[in-house]
Amino acid sequence: MQVVVGVSFKKAGKVYYFDPSDFELRYDDKVIVETSRGIELGEVVINPKEVSEEEIIQPLKKVIRKATTKDLEQLEINQQKELEAYDICLEKIAKHGLPMKLVDVEYTFDNNKVIFYFTAEGRVDFRELVKDLASVFRTRIELRQIGVRDEAKMIGGLGPCGLQLCCKTFLREFEPISIKMAKTQELSLNPAKISGICGRLMCCLRYECDTYEDDITEDDEIILTDDDDFILLDDEDIAKKHFRRNNGNDS
Image (cartoon, rainbow, N blue to C red):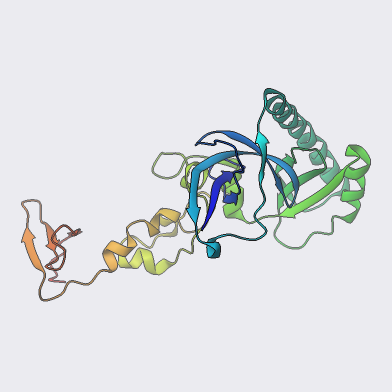
C-alpha cells in the first residue's frame, strides 16, 4: 500500500495522485507539484490515504511544497496573461484565416508553455500560426484541438434544468452516454429535450439509468401508492427501493 494525496488542477478536473512526502495536507490546500507539463499549482481534493500499487500510475511524483503567498500571486499573474494571450491569438487566427474557434488559453505555472485550446470541424494546418505565436510569447506553444463536450466543460453555462452544467461543477471525467439510456427511462427521444448545450446527449441520462435497468422478479413485492406510483421492495434487500411510474404495465 502507498500513501497518496489527490490533486486537481482545475475545478471539477481530473484527479491525480501524488506522494504527500512529509507534508501535513488536507482538503483545499494549495500545493506545488511536478507534472509531465512542468511545475504546476494544484488543489488537494482527496485527503492523504492508502491505495494499492495497481491504482497508481508510476512513477509517483512527490509534492514539492505547499503553495506560498508568492505562488498564489504568480497564479493571478498567469491568469491575467491568459486573458491577454486569448485576445492576441484571436487576432492571429483571423490574420491567417483559419477555420477554428478559440476556446481557452492556459499558461503552465512556470510559464514554460502556453496552451491554446480550440475546436474545429476538421483538421487544421496551424503551423504558421504556431510560429507567429512563438515569436510573440517567446516560449513553447501548444495548440490542442478539443471536442464539444470539453468546450462546454471549459466555458460552463446553464443546463436545461436551470442549474450550472454538471461537467463544470462536479463531473471530473466524461462517461459514455447512449440513446438506449433515454429509452430505458421512457424519456422523450426528441433531441432538443435530451441534448445538452454541447449538442451531445446529456450526461445526467446516466444518473438513474441503473435503477431503471433493474428487473422486477417474481419474488419482488409491489406496493401501489395513491398517486399511481409503485414501490418495488426486493426480498433480498428490503432497504433497496426502486420508484417507477406505473404506465398500466405490470413490469
